[in-house]
Image (cartoon, rainbow, N blue to C red; front, side, top):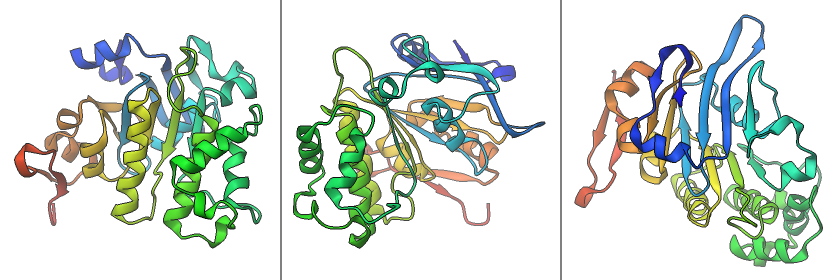
Length: 282
């Protein structure tokens, strides 16, 4: 399988093994909000259950659009998105909700709702399950807040509520009856401090370790380096220019060509993942 359309960019051996077991696939998808101005162009990608895949790239590269196409919220102009070989666009709401969940950048309640009411929304298109809601609230350590209004919580607590809503939707967390399930998260800790970002990514990584497929859009390259199993770099032309293990996909030279600024990969203590830092004035 190839990714990146006309670039003919070949997937490496690591990704080839991954793709063989993947069930959520974008096949040659292109999309434009306005005719003649494509956001994504002939993109082929596949995602496996049990991995945390992070998508990075410059503003306007199509990262959020990619998630919405995978979710079925947008329909590609060309190509298709499939799960288990079935077009996502043809799946009924309840079937889709049992396989794909979405976390927006910021989830602000449209009306005053308690934590428990908000978490229960995860079951909106699924059978009612108080056990799933209880489990999700417990898993995200929200038991002391379940009867409080979400709007009165701190930003970090609201972010945990958003994660709990998805946990209720995907409950029990992990594989279910052999059907792979996915969480798609668009900057899940946007505008929050590094502690909350670390907590959110740790939670998502634990879900991946339990068998869920997780695809996350991030701007923080160091967080991608430290938490991802796989990193996909989208270029400004809406095509993948890198895809693989974090240390290779986040190559400083590739990042410089993609973002237009020089980067350094700083080594971490005791051989840890380290950090990706843009050079001052690069």
